[in-house]
Image 1 (tube, rainbow, N blue to C red):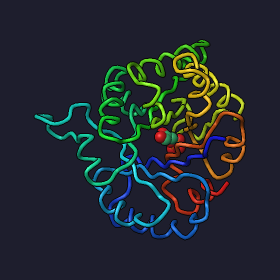
Image 2 (image 1 turned 30 degrees about the vertical axis):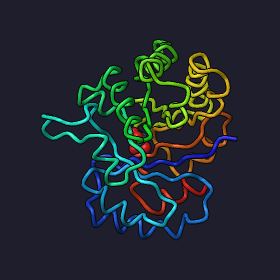
Image 3 (image 1 turned 135 degrees about the horizontal axis):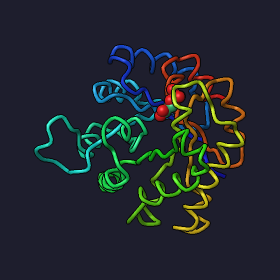
Length: 248
Ligand code: 13P
């Protein structure tokens, strides 16, 4: 049985004092959950969040990193830097980074490799646009993104990878994919993983759904056969809402 993973993606929100207060408030509410809980916070919140989350069941992740180990890349943050403060997870290839910051399948793949080399666990995002879905190309798009993100990744390394299917048209729009559509898309991704790595790895790999996950739709989404939890944006900014999603 795969574990359930509930990851919050705070995006460019929350100051350090807000991060500390959020973690302090949510800790007692979710302390008994069996689900894995991750908060992917802005760089400036990492250190404070890691300190506040010590001795809790909350894990801390970053939202991006650079693919080079070090060097003249003004403004960038390396995998080694994330590892050095105690970060465990890092989101790679979020559609907002693909859309606004020229992230490509190639840079995603490079970042995945550097993350793994630094013992960080990548949460790799994939997902189609509305146009692609309407043209019947969703399967082709997301299986290709999956294949390219995982190029050169070994079976052993797959154990430290989480995939997140986030249809772009469902992000921040209030439009959730139906649980059936989301589950089908995630099955396509799992089939691709099976084709590349075999059934055992495909049965083990955690694949999340993201896109307007809320307390009132989480249960239906997470009780499908193939959705292993959520990557939650807006609803992860509110203690009450996010704790309900963790506890579904
Ligand atoms: P929303 O939950 O706000 O739609 O965002 C989803 C997302 O992009 C998580 O990475």
